[in-house]
Image 1 (tube, helix red, strand yellow):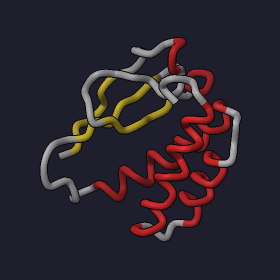
Image 2: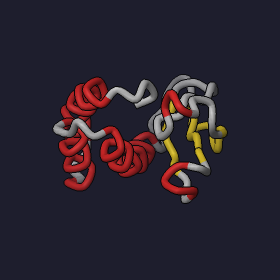
Image 3: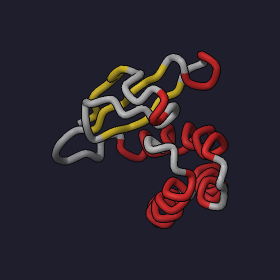
Image 4: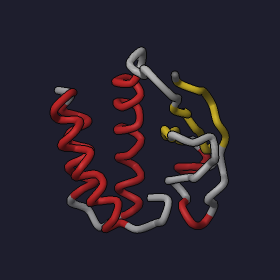
Length: 112
């Protein structure tokens, strides 16, 4: 989504869906990933990504054995209501605005 490429986002969502399905039984998360993987609408994919981010964060709690993840936030996403995402880098690469505002956001929390 950082590249504002709906086809690439759909493919990545499909791969993530298979992984999530094997470790999480939350139908909401699987449904969001199914919608992302079958859509060519980057805006819809970004909306569903909020749900996926929240679910993955819960899955990672107390499970990271080495390294860190970063919970990042863009206050301007979704008409200034804001949106979170997870990254393996402190460097901001905004999935909600992608190439329009790539570095918009902040690190909200380090998860390790």
